[in-house]
Length: 101
Image 1 (cartoon, rainbow, N blue to C red):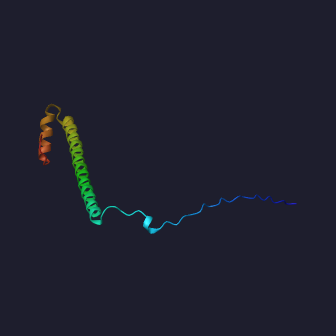
Image 2 (cartoon, rainbow, N blue to C red):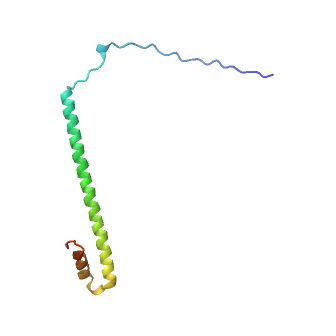
Image 3 (cartoon, helix red, strand yellow):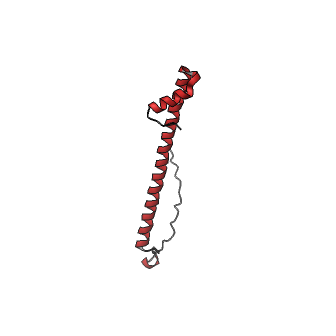
């Protein structure tokens, strides 16, 4: 015989809901012109901030590239001409179109 066990589950009774009239709903306190101005200012500040961060990242990338290139040139000059390495570095950088400090 197969006996089925049945459990009685009590269902939670949902509390009564109240209807809120439209007059009781909160109304936005700011005017439409003020929020538009605020939005424009936020967009403007965000754009300026993004431009500044982007410019700094480009500058930093170029600086790192210049440093790595100078280190490569310095290493090559040190291997080829150890006694005049600084003169070699200056000459190679100028020949490549760069300016020396």
